[in-house]
Amino acid sequence: MEIGGAERALLGLLNAIDTSIVDVDLFINQHTGAFMKLIPDKINLLPEMRGYNAIERPLKQILIEGQFKIAFARLKAKIKYRQYIRKNKLEHKEEGSGSHYIMDEVIPYLPSLYYLGEYDLAIAFLDPPHIIQKKVLARKRIEWIHTDWGTIITDYSKLYHWWADNDYIASISPEITKSFLKAFPGLDDKIVLIENILSPRMVIEQSNACRAKEMEGNNGVTLLSIGRITYQKNFEIIPYVCRCLIDKGINNFKWFILGQGNHEEIDKTVIKLKVEDYVIFLGARENPYPYINACDIYLQPSRYEGKSVTVREAQILQKPVIITNYPTSSSQITHRLDGIISEMAPKEIANAIIELLQDTDLKDHIISYLQNHDYGNESEINKLYQIIGRR
Image 1 (cartoon, helix red, strand yellow):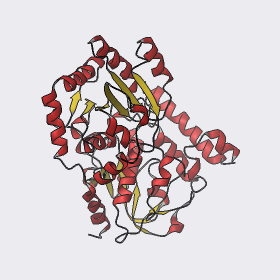
Image 2 (cartoon, helix red, strand yellow):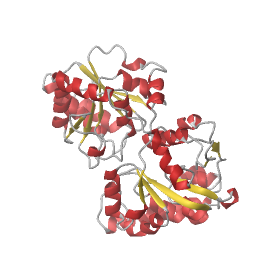
Image 3 (cartoon, rainbow, N blue to C red):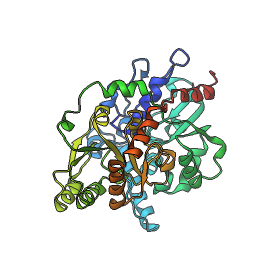
């Protein structure tokens, strides 16, 4: 349960569940991460289990523990995936693209969870995928899609049967559904739209729980982006946007970045472009909401997203949002109504920032819309009750 948007979406789901209606067991392959302590007490957290806890940890660690079969399976999957990339002359950029190869090899060596009994519904919410088909006894099965499948580099033909074996496939937006069905045609009848569940009350309460001390004292414009430092989030574009702003005469700003990951390469660009005073990495925070509360503009310069939880949280906190024009961006924002969609280029992002700073009517219009629009959707949980047959 590391800090991340999908993990926050899981917490939203768990908090929304009425345990007077259903009993919930939560199985997490590895009991690590800052969000573990945020799992609601009403949820029955099952013990960590050998085998499952070796799926994602460093190979050296699991070899020391003697989990040789899992280590061998992961190495075999890595080789197969690289062979597929080379054979098809593909460029592998997204770190999670090979996870399905790993599960295909690892699943035979994982212990069965049948001893837990039969469930009315088994949910696969986060990676690793497809365990519920082979290892869990359940009357119905549903697996979540969180990302744009047009960005995943993998052999789709090998995965079709995994998805087809589900009774339902939960998509978080219509755009995500479209990209998924393009990759896996013929599964239309299994799709059910269940948006990420967010509680405005919880977001607002958490935004006032502490101060964003590192952002205090900035007398200029405060920009903020949140996310793991990965290819997907495209944070390497930020120094170039800052350079464009400065060249256009905008120099009274600081751009804060919240999230875990290695930013050494971005730091080199920051120095090269001489924007050291403008780009500030803060690392990961368990509670990002005070930082959103303290910013003037929230920016998500991603190459792609499923449906960004953080963007929705920024809207709940009534912050003007700029996102890039990734394939599913229209599911997140209506351009110039509740945010800005910018083309994915430094100059265009800079122009969007300048427009929000200089066009007060536009900025006030967006904020007014956010103030009068309810971004809460806790009623989405009723769709799960209907699947189970409890509503």
